[in-house]
Image 1 (tube, rainbow, N blue to C red):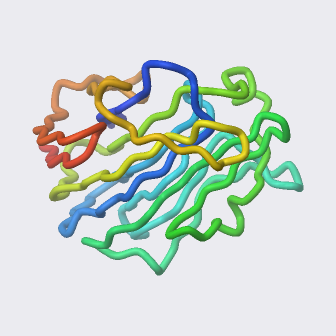
Image 2: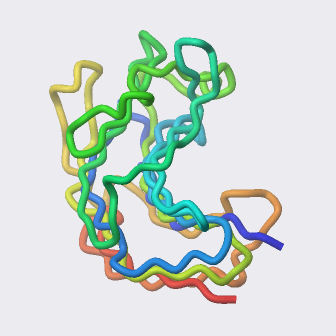
Image 3: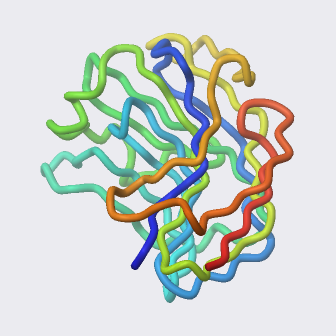
Length: 208
C-alpha cells in the first residue's frame, strides 16, 4: 500500500496572497518508487506548486489546481536546471481578481505556469486573501529516502499588488505531520526537526 504524507507548515490566518522561500534541495535523494516533493500552497488544498523528484524521471516542476489558456489541466514537466544540493528561490502568487496564479523559480516565472487560471474546484476554496503553506511530501511504498531539505527566509505576500512582504515566523503558523491522501496512515512516516523559524531546516528520512 502506498502512503501519501508530509510535514506541513501552514499559516493560522487567511491574510495572504502568496509566499516566497528559499529551498535547499537534499544533496542525497534515493527514490525507488513514487516521488518526494517540496512545495508551496495557497488556500486549503487549492493551488499547490513546487519541485518533485520522481522515480525513473528525476526532477520535475509542478503546479496543481489550475488550467492554461486552452482550459487544459496544468500538472508537471521534467526539468534539467535542478540538481541535488542546489538552493533555489521559489515564489507562488495568486490574484483573486483575475483568478490566476504564477509560479516563479529563481525569480523567473515558469513559462507554462504563468498567469494560469484556478480550476472551478480550487475556486471554491480561494478568496482574495488565503492561508499559505510549505510542505515536505512523499508518495511511495515506504522505501524512499533523502538527506536534509531546508526551507529558509520564508516571506508572506501581504497585498494584491505584490509590493508588501512580511517575514514568516513560527508564531504565524503551525507545523504538523499530515496525511495528504485518504488511503494511507502516518505509521511509517518519521521526521526529526531542527526548526529555526517557520518550517526551516528539516532533516527528513523515511523507512518502512
